[in-house]
Image 1: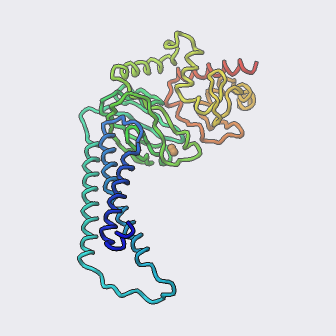
Image 2: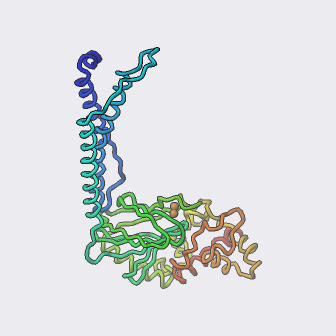
Image 3: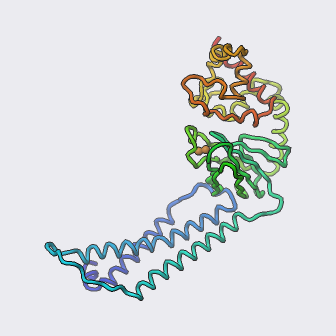
Length: 356
Ligand code: CUA
């Protein structure tokens, strides 16, 4: 190889670059870059990515080969401090190195545009979901389905969905990697994104924009379910909003409270022995009666009133050692009053038990 490079440098370089390109493309395509594909857009986006890799590897290899070759072939001799020969440019070469990148970039841009146009296409009668972001939680509302509200994004499989994304405070970014979907939430604007989930499963909606101290915990469930199950979920949500989930728990308020505590996402931040949660972003709730005695009495509140206030207006008392604004203040909006009563009763009861 070394002899070939010395005798016929152009041929040698071409052989080396060709091999490097083939190996580079093979490695880059063999890497599994993406999580599961769960929407109709996933395939198009993954293909686009592969095409970009195939187009980028030869460019990278070409640039690096020329650079490395030049460094070694025209290395200055020790002691040589003279100037290089004056070069006046090379019109043909310049035309080539402007035209090829121009054609490549234009073609890739057009391809990207066609894919984007395709995956964002409007379709008749989409399921509209209003998404609200705030420090540090997502909430979802289905305006056409009796304004059902949820802390989980539940979607029927194979139905076009239009997400209307808003923020109550700062910029967040709505990201469901399996849908290959990401959009910023911008104060004062409603951003729309469309998606057709085509794979059943449980995924995560993740916040992809640093938005404050709780950014890393701003992650909630997305569930893609069969259309029949979706209808069932909607009716169940409506019923739960009406009775706080008591009927679904067979009339047992403690079970209803425990379920609601987990479903609402409280377990992600609070330790509570009865619910088996050990998170520490928020105050441990096994001490709730102590906190209620300390902070609630100051305001002349009973333990239950204290708990209710702590859920509905988390800014009202912040337990020392915890940061104001970590707990979202959207539970009053997202839970029905019956659900809040269930939670308050549950928390007052189990916390009482722990400290007795
Ligand atoms: Cu919201 Cu990061």
